[in-house]
Length: 277
Image (cartoon, rainbow, N blue to C red; front, side):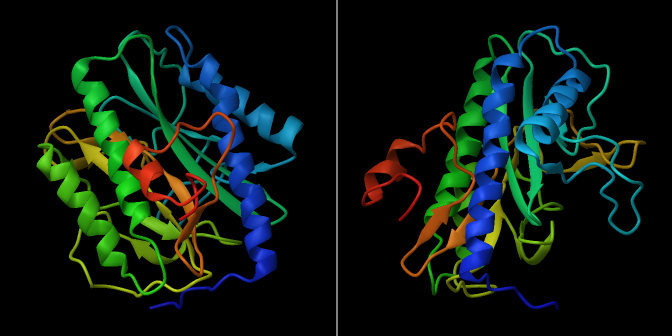
């Protein structure tokens, strides 16, 4: 297995900037997520904001891992039963839809990667609960991050919380190391057992991005080679932050003025700021 890159002080500074810029794209696009707008228009707005306002590069555009065709857009928009990698297009959002918008920007060679769920108009009770539980899953996973902990500790708390709520965890996709490379080691599974997998050390940077389904965990790939949906057509939700392992705990790098606050149980357990522990 490829080794995990431990980031230098300069790397960490660069990743803080990239993370903040990625989160600010989500702040910018939030007011535009309303009934009638197409996912393609959301993509256009984000793309222009990244390139013209921020001077960032949208990392997904033309991204081409082995065995894939190049990804054709600047962002991912995953609506309702789309688990991840939904390609923006002519689909108009309607009242009651839920959409995950996934942003990765490159600034000075560093990648900032984050995603949020958005409600289009008034969500159903099911959609709101799934979104809330998934948000708690992400933060519970983040709360386990500190030197000496294991990646399995993160996956375990996420899986426990999701399954206790009656939901399931997608297994085929996971969080990942990130830095000057979009996807690098380690893989951060959103299920697992405590005390297993790699031990965390200060200077690691990776994403925590659980995908939680209201129904079963099985997925299917669409003909475009990118879009992933739930096999049983149930709703899916996802949240994502990029996180640094610090000497004493963690620091969330994808922070911005408009980001949703961490759940109360996270804020209570943190000493000072809600994004460091």
